[in-house]
Image (cartoon, rainbow, N blue to C red; front, side, top):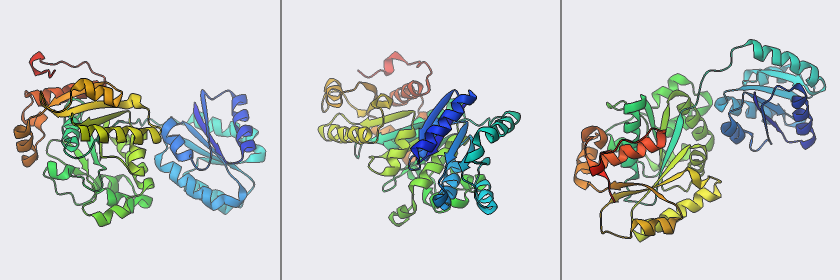
Amino acid sequence: MRVIVAADDPTEKTNLIDALKRKRVCTHVDEADFANVVDGVIRVQPDLIIIGLRNERIPEYHALVSEVREIAIGRIVVVGPTVEAKAVLKFLQEGAFQYIDQADFESDFETVLTRIRSEPPPTVGQGRSIVVASAGGGCGASTLAVNLATALMKKHGPVALMDLNLESGDIATLLNLKPKHSISDFCRNVSRMDQSMFENCMVAHPSGLHVLAAPPSLEQIRDVTLRGIRRLIHMTRMKFPYVVIDVGFPFRQEHALALQQAESIVLTLRPEFCSLNHASRVIDFLSKANVPTAKVKAVVNRYRRRMGVSLADVQTALGMKVSEVIPDDPRRVSVCNDRGVPFVTHSPRSPVAKRLCSLTHSLNGAVPKLDSQASVK
């Protein structure tokens, strides 16, 4: 059983962890404090979350339990001092599995464990998150995100495509969609969001993609919140085997959140000095957000021989290997974008589609099967 223990009081946290170890039921114990418990739950996805509270901060802990419940698969147990029945009931209403008086933790936790063991464990799993980031304009990151999501969908079934490029997102335009709702609507209603409302926030493309569109106006960006994006990503990963998120040129907290949770990050750039400079800034942003560079796949997009800097120079400048090279095919790609049809569907045998599918295989763990004539050196 994977457990995370959250408490602001170091002594209380230590006591809870020691008690758990004495029970010998935990294969993995993490610890967190009040400020980072949500991020810890996202990272660990524990079977059990134990929150040790202080009496003077009960209203804050009610809100915390509610927020953790929104993104947690495991059960939440609150441990605290003797409080009024109304306060305990509020914890249960917000999603706690049990409230235990800290003076009786050792004995009462046995009862909780018996209940947990008697109930079937949650069977939901998390889909794989892939973030596409851009080293500035003109890199074709959004087109790549659309086609990457489509290629994944053709092999794995329904895929969600999220447009987190809030200021200039054009995923819906590239797919010729006119969504009624957007990410801003989700965030505005996050406190009462249920599965039906979540599904209404998406728009289906004829190809089978499920799109979460960027806000339609700059004014609606103000409705986007970190809590909303955190829950949106969680709900999307619970429903779909793959989630592709286009963040554009990352600089917002919401982008950092998506990048931190991603299994893979596709950094798209062009072999030009300005693009390389922007790519270096993206890598610096990742470093400051504590995102391991091992997650990053550098992809040179819209590549033409004998243009700009060499691929060797690109790798030297970035300090990482170029994972894939996508050839430039402006006419074909432009026609497909204008028609709202991904080029991997419209022209699956084209070199650009084959290289994109090669990238897709590298992201989902399958062995790529490439036509040798499609290679770009």
